[in-house]
Image (cartoon, rainbow, N blue to C red; front, side, top):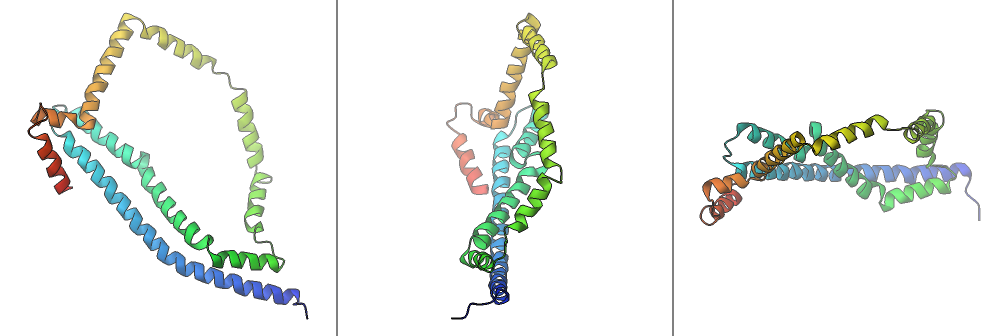
Length: 219
């Protein structure tokens, strides 16, 4: 039985790999569309959650705390500079690509064919990483950062914390802390929406169930 030449093996492996790429591209198009739909649902669910919280906040009598409660909800839901939606979109699209393109029988068959033909497809990843680690300066940079962390002595920070701690146990410090606690308690009632229920229904018996039903029907 004749042994296939190296050129023949490479041509066959290239054909199998090309087929795997073609199948992966076709599959990826469909699953990326699914990821877009999932991202749209994520956005709708997030908006609905915030709208429900805004609705329950209602009347508080303090415009400043109302405004900051709205801002805080937006930051909690979307992150600074809308970071959370961007990360969610990246997560959904990456997961769709990895699960439905990379980790498939066709892709594994294509990679195996390249190895059988004597090729080294893993070098597509390892070579750039090796260059970044050695020639690109990543190793040297991480070493310097590690040395900086080990040699850091937070003396100034320790002294400042000591001054703050001593001030907290003085009369002005205790009064300031008490005022901050009261303000935080009041703001939390605004943020959590307790003020609306208290305003319309102090006993929690008459209007609160109606508000819950109305909110579920509208949102």
